[in-house]
Length: 210
Image (cartoon, rainbow, N blue to C red):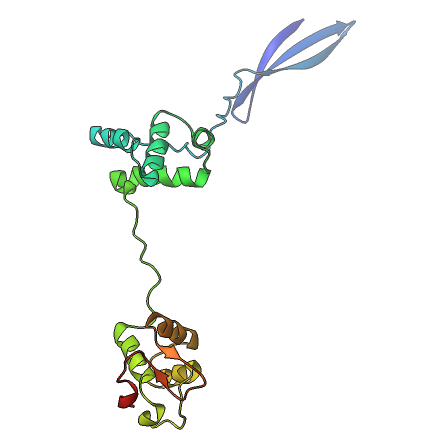
């Protein structure tokens, strides 16, 4: 004789087939596992994954701007418009990279910027450039010293060198390197000859003032 038995273990139900076999006056029981009553719910393979990056829903103004930007002669604007357009048409980041021959980082930056800033993301940020190490007033002071005989500044040498002027400037609270002084000389077309005892300019009256 056989029958099906349901057992609950750890909150889940399992099915077993029980078989009773009589031999003479003795009865032998066997059990066969048949599986769970209700299969466990399969885990979603996408569970825990980061949602795919895509462009948000656009306004009519944004859509019109993208359409115009696709025809722009400015590569920065046109490239961004292509990325946004392809993303809006449900292309994945990988597909966009393949179609535009670009890298994943750039595509991600463009989409994230548009989702956050909208049409402002099409404005190229102006480079602030390398900050000046010295002010205009300090630069003018350097030029003034450069065109003054060292002895008039109570210094015990007859000619300026870039190194000497750098040291003198630092003592007067202007931190400037010899190489910077060299660039100032070049930019202002001040002639400097080591064989002469002075710094001089193209001003004809310069030597008279020393």
